[in-house]
Image (cartoon, rainbow, N blue to C red; front, side):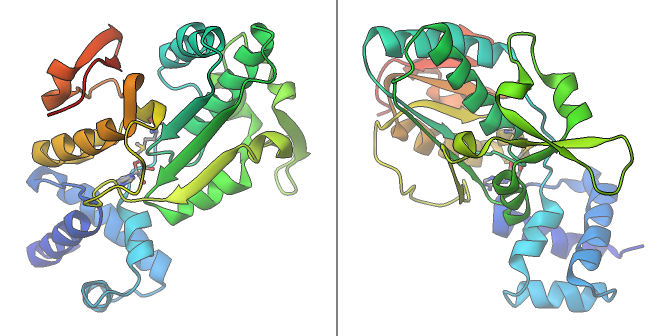
Length: 278
Ligand SMILES: C[S@@+](CC[C@H](N)C(=O)[O-])C[C@H]1O[C@@H](n2cnc3c(N)ncnc32)[C@H](O)[C@@H]1O
């Protein structure tokens, strides 16, 4: 077990390095994360581990231990329906390309679901030469590594993929070397090359992205980890990067907060930017 002081040190470090708020009701979760951290740094002495992190060492492992990376393919599938039925369709009608930013990509299921949707919609509308770019970022280097590998267990993929997606068009099959009968799938290389993965902390004071540049921003199931002031600050910085008329997708229990007067709601947690934030 950990002392109240150790839990508090971890709580403060989590906020400092990621903005993640772990309230007083999260002691069990913090304890589990500290267990994970000790395994990651291969040191069982928690005070020594916390001292090292406070001294600026092992920060990446600390972040990996303290982030919640739960995700799945086509999570909140209505967002992908909207992307296919409205956003891509409009881009094709306007003969414009699409720049998409996925701001908390976790292990890759979300950006690859976006990618499959774009590829599917291009074929559906006969617009194979429409250009798009897809930037996916996360603070956690371990999940980004998984994104870059693009390898997933078939059973999980199969459960989440909607009827209109044919997995064999996007994944190649690999037999799992250890588990008999179970196999893995890997995103096809030519598709994987279309996503750019980068580490980025949403708490960064000034974002390195151009203003009004993205047509679509996904910011789903990450704001919930921050306090309300930080959520507002992040939303404003993300909003600045979105063009007027662009679409912001938020997670099921997130809201646009201070951006509400500057957006029009067009579906479940789907918001269109109507004017610049002043
Ligand atoms: C629960 S997952 C959500 C993944 C995906 N967006 C989805 O909806 O399925 C939250 C992700 O946010 C990332 N995250 C947490 N704090 C972050 C921060 N300050 N900057 C960027 N990403 C962060 C975590 O590493 C994690 O992968």
